[in-house]
Length: 238
Image (cartoon, rainbow, N blue to C red; front, side):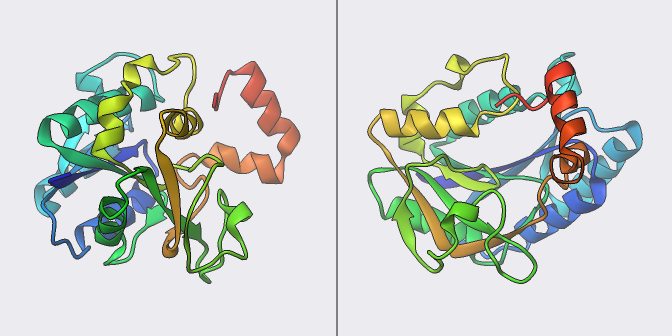
């Protein structure tokens, strides 16, 4: 990996998104990087705000409305497009979701940690709340703080680096287009192909769960409504 491609998929939730973008651009890097924000049919007002932010802050904004007329979510298209760009640039692909805040050293350290491990397929920073307590989706890692270890459960893409070796091995066009989210499938495929997925609980990122998809909060506040929406509307296919 000669460089990093960082991506943040976005649909509205503009205030949280801008905080995510600011934290990434404030990071300390020694490796060359390029930052892409994929706008997945945000409102016209929020699209304008993202365009203005890209001009002011220096990230590259990709409006998916220029690439497809398929309604949001278009996470698969984001992954396929980003994979191609990363392979062409000999870059690792680092996904940071729009409800995550990274520290100054997080992303460079994740890159270094992955590069040091030749068998690494995916390297993920653990998510924590504002009090630095491990939170969703890594509750299973509680009690394993300040470590780096192979993880056979799936890794979330809240803040995860997919190595160039892995990207070259598994074509994301093989992913199921009927699903909305693909972190489980990609994590398992990495293991099946002989790679090791590492969870870095030594690297923490602040995660506001589902901040970018507020309706998913119903999973905790009104689970009956959540599952009704999930199955009747076909939402959140994993």
